[in-house]
Length: 223
Image (cartoon, rainbow, N blue to C red; front, side):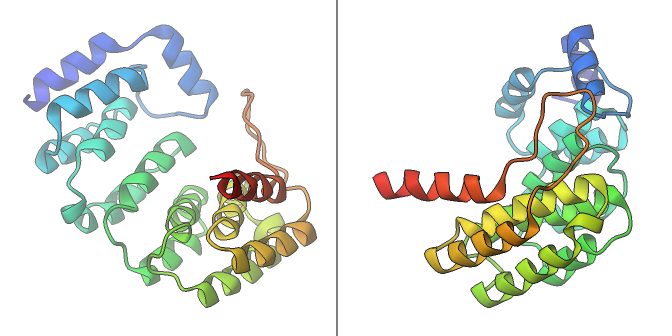
């Protein structure tokens, strides 16, 4: 499928209801309103096409950018993630990019640079990416994760709105990684207390980290 035809198809698949929903979730870019079901179907059809993904991202259309993160080649991801992160403007596309970036074997130093960014969306992206990798035996050791818990505990309540949400997700991810870190994360979550995040005109809520960690642990114990 070529770029021009794909953009026409995306436009035809958009609905006003979806546009309203995405706007309530903070999407500010040009928007067609394509459902994730339709984006998923297009992903299956296209599979991996890194050149097409780059064209989709350059369109600056939200739906096209989400699809770009679905069809880009993780093996070539390091060549685009830095540039794409500079264009982030809502948590919807930020989460999509973090999901893709987690497949690209990113450099921990680069992740930390994103996490420390003063830009809300780049910071949110860095912590969202970190949260995805913290659950796995990836680039971060248990000792490093314990240090990050200290950082989160110190900084979370002063962080920018969506960064707070991603930092809270990181506490959860650390807590579900193994039993030792579970105890550390639960203790940190107790000291942190309630994390206040403005989710705008949506029903979204920031999960209670301790409750989520305990629920996940209980579910794993039943298996």
